Length: 285
Image (cartoon, rainbow, N blue to C red; front, side, top):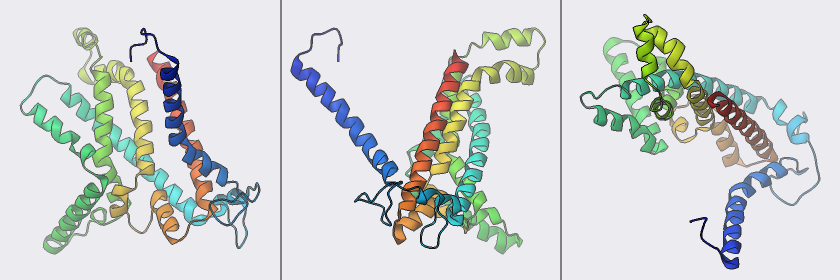
């Protein structure tokens, strides 16, 4: 659309209606879920039975709030541990990969870069199944031939971290690479000419310049890991993450407790995303 061209009344009405319907479609399910989190009913849907905070704070036999539900609290703690580990490792690996691909042309650079992007385009279900089969095969090989049992090669916390890291680190690489493309390499050359070592240049010049991208990529990596379902479903062990726990509860019969958990997740992730946006803009400015 060219803004300088005149527009008629019908066009303006259609434009306004399209934008309104788009955001209505996007946010109405989230708004309804948040409202039903306070519904005084034992069923997760309508009709509205009145306002209550029981699904957050109640500690009764037939109605337990999320802050007294050991199952979901434990799953949340596992998800937080997983997300922190994945975000930390993905930042390291993704940043190193970004440095590699921003170097001068080297042999098979384009092919290797294409391969690095592969985990992002492979469906999560296929990635999860592939990782499970590969880890099981490797585990059986080591156990049968060397008598060594690697727990990380079985469905477990470690395997979930490796599985999620395999594609989240690629996203970090893309974010950091985009920031590196705008970097003035003459700053590094000047520091090297003044006697700085390569590690000092990276620590005092390159990393501070990349800080907004690192903060943004780390925050998104944390959120991607925390809410991941498709890949985690095939790699999780006895200690389930929150998305897997919610799936099992919904499959067995949903309650308003699910709405309360969803409300907390929507608010917390929105606040985290807003803080990340404000911090990133401040760092860039």
